[in-house]
Image 1 (tube, rainbow, N blue to C red):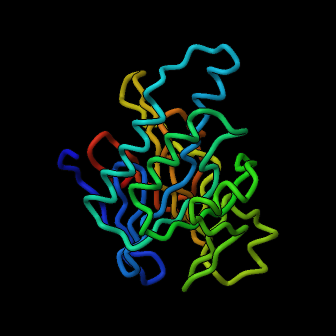
Image 2: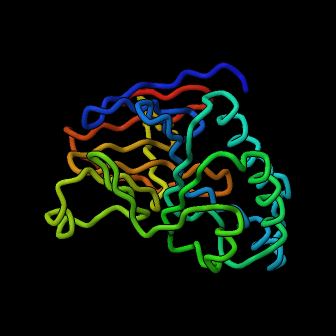
Image 3: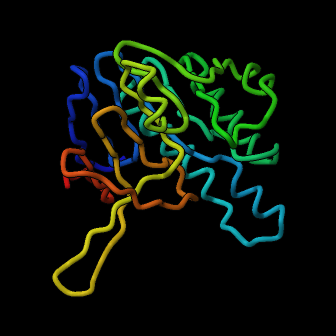
Length: 220
């Protein structure tokens, strides 16, 4: 992996390293947190006759391997949409990848696209949950709506919406970047998978937004 510039952010007294690979390293617990990889999405579209490059799935797996080799996390937390839709040949790549890191505990907070039977993940020694609580945090797949936030004192960390932000220049030029979003009550991670889109979020002046460039994370 080439040299990159991560950005450290203090969240509820915990140190998060925001990585340009669109993941977070929770440094106190040595946990790598990722959202919305959507493995199998390429195979799903190709099966439907849509021409998509084959290599995207392997690139995502290779990037996860690089992150594990570099940061040596003690565990991984996936915030949903790990494997996209029904079983296809891309699952075999994922099985081989898991075998390379079989000693590392991995937890999946199930997302709306995680429709494979739980037995598939259990064979790979995954812990499957609907939500996960630890310390000041509640890990979910989808952000909580305001009426649900009143029922918890924990800080929500989720994915699902593939957040992005648009930067505009003095002329008509503009660029859209994936981003990390930290609001008063919850945070949203960018989609890790390459074959995903972005949804430009609205935010207030008090929110913290960090744009993801190719090799660094920047505060906006």
